[in-house]
Image (tube, rainbow, N blue to C red; front, side, top):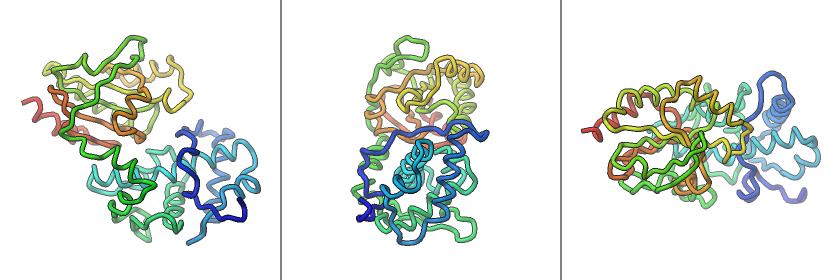
Length: 306
């Protein structure tokens, strides 16, 4: 394949590895490998130049740790266009570099900016955003360029296509404590379905708001239902660690394991947190992506309470 310059987006989506959280921040091998990969990409990314993935594998990233870090960043780059557009359409503003870093657990300084430069420089990627030349922050987003691109439009369509006003897909899954949890258990209630994974930075931020809303409105027939994606994402957290996280954060609402069926039924959720507000009749009334202020969610709940 060295004779064919294959860009980051020349490889089939189905070859991408699942989202993996980098482990540790204290000089562990995974962190050191990601630093090496990032430093190389930051130095070698040039406008209009497509990467030969096989060449990077065979000549540059030759250790298992380096290849694992490269796979992770490759995966993030592929997800970035859909994330930026989904965030922009739901929040009515572009995501910041910090929000991108939090969403994909990019812990190294400048890492989010480097990945955005890869998107900008790869000629096969539509020029769908512009950035401030000084700060590097995204200034404008042209969502239509991604929505019509065959490599990304299906992901965007599944995640954003008119959820509000549609029936919420039913499900029955295993709860964290080993029991059974079904959407039908909450028929007649206002349900905020919350997709998250353990130690996801924006999930950590939003959790206190959800705990507060559960406490404030549960007597009025409101309930938050958590869908934990650890097992689906193959993150190495044990049940004990999840229970410890739940206890530490004083989570006062039911939590279940997200299954592949639920993930697919709700548009192939791949960005965390994602929330669906479902009314008493089982209709989706609001859809949120990434961290939200408590008041933003509350303003969507209040009309349903009336």
